[in-house]
Length: 94
Image (cartoon, rainbow, N blue to C red; front, side, top):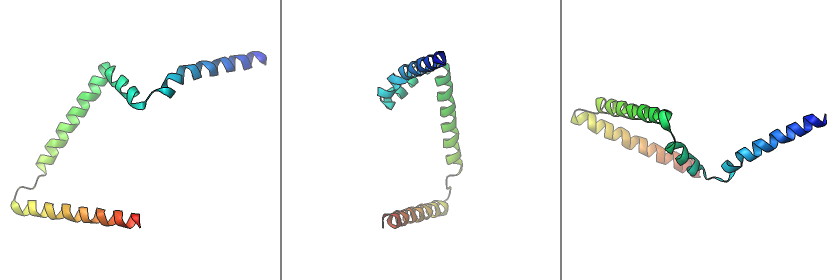
């Protein structure tokens, strides 16, 4: 029984000591460190993000309003959405 307690305490101590640097590090520092040492996985993620961004830009350009009437309608819809968002914020504040 004493052997089990000492091995459990030792395992707990190792875990606490192993995690202690992360407790005192700023999350931004951890993210920068991870990004700096990204390696192959970091490059792959960056490439996938870049491809996703390019696909999103292409999709936005495909759905752009072409005529003056379509642009005006899109502008009115954007104004309406902004008004609704403002009204929703005012409702939440009261």
